[in-house]
Image 1 (cartoon, rainbow, N blue to C red):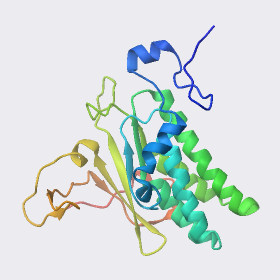
Image 2 (image 1 turned 90 degrees about the horizontal axis):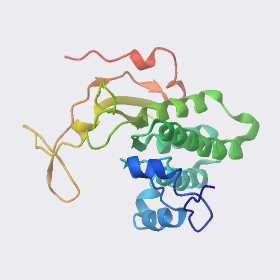
Image 3 (image 1 turned 90 degrees about the vertical axis):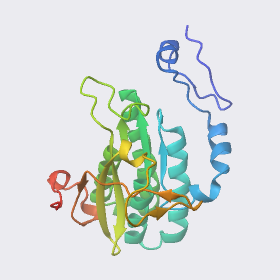
Image 4 (image 1 turned 60 degrees about the vertical axis):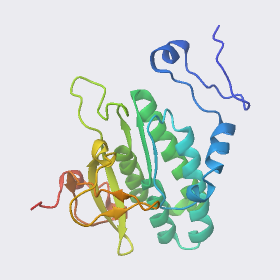
Length: 234
């Protein structure tokens, strides 16, 4: 008989002892998740504030962050469906995760899409647009990735770089996508010429994208061909 560790709400914090031994996999309890997120409560309620969980597991932190963001979107924009859809997509696109176990990656994506769909359907019931859900699913396929956050690569023989997509709202409903390697995003080197600056006044670098994509409407992100359609680079 399995004797799995459980949190205060009765949720299992481990899948099995072998995964704990092999990967140190122990899920953070809901109470601890909320206590930690409350330390940065203002940021969790900013719709476009970006969060990266480098060992996201099945998404306990990311799911709660999305809930908090969507609560804000609902309060501010639920009277206008297009505005709600746009800001809910912006909220989802600000959440990133890396996970070394493939089954957890898919579970995390599914949980986040489930939360997104729940809020959306609660607000608009029969008026749900399949395009909005497809955009959400596509974003999750680019934001929640299989990889090793220590090596910054996929944990297989290919060892390919982890590549995230940045989603920036432009001119209302349009989205600009740029792809970056995780290694590039985590560099800590100043660049020649004009610099960006952190909130602490330290010099910061401007990362170089590995790909840029043309502007596209947020409801069309999943359209066939978009993933391979890049801007020409000089």
